[in-house]
Length: 346
Image 1 (cartoon, rainbow, N blue to C red):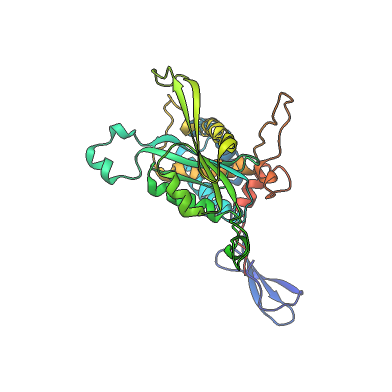
Image 2: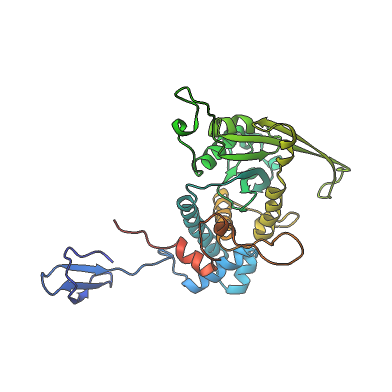
């Protein structure tokens, strides 16, 4: 509703405007205003119930064409829904994932492709096209809370490594240098903000140093396999090589781990049909992939419950609950309403 100029509580209906919105008029001062109906889907003509059902099925791992057959919405409409809701999820996560206090972040890159695989691109397009070919989902997860604070979709390059690490650092609660550093002839040091574990990608050390400086404990882990001759067959891991790059020495190197983020890769392939291997499912546009992953990230953080360790079968609180960003397990309806809530008027 457009706020009236007056502060009086007595009002009456005063016709409608040319768009059909109800007008009101103050009985005391005569000020008028308009009551506008909030449209969560903007100008899209699909019903809210059908949109919720379609998005819910997509977040549960159903393909676009299967959703089309189940609900009756055209696949082009479903793709528009994905982009509309995914962009809103991206803005929602960007607002909520701020001032975080996390203990151990594990980073990884998951391979997929857009339109066609890298080997199918002509030589000219390999140089000029950034939105086709092999693509990587840059993700990180907190070992304790299982929170996915940020992500990036793009090529596996040093520039994207720096961009991603800087974005993650901006979402954490960083100390003020004067409070944590040694100064005024007093003993002190740099207060560690978080521990970071990555694979052996050569771009990570520079990116971590650029984003966190001395306020981090950083180590890399390289896993060694054998019998990895056939594609898509499980290989036998025979050893690991852990290296403490900054602030990790001796027996502390055993804390370097990327198993949790690699497990998250499996969850992503289950809940995003476009990531299923050896199928006809893949992303035709980079924008669709980014929107679909934003939907997954919002659903995973606020609605999905991982299982507790052991064989009890009990579920843990959601990642948002563990990180103190939510007080209960959100339903998909709650997530839908929160993501598409109208902007607060100043």
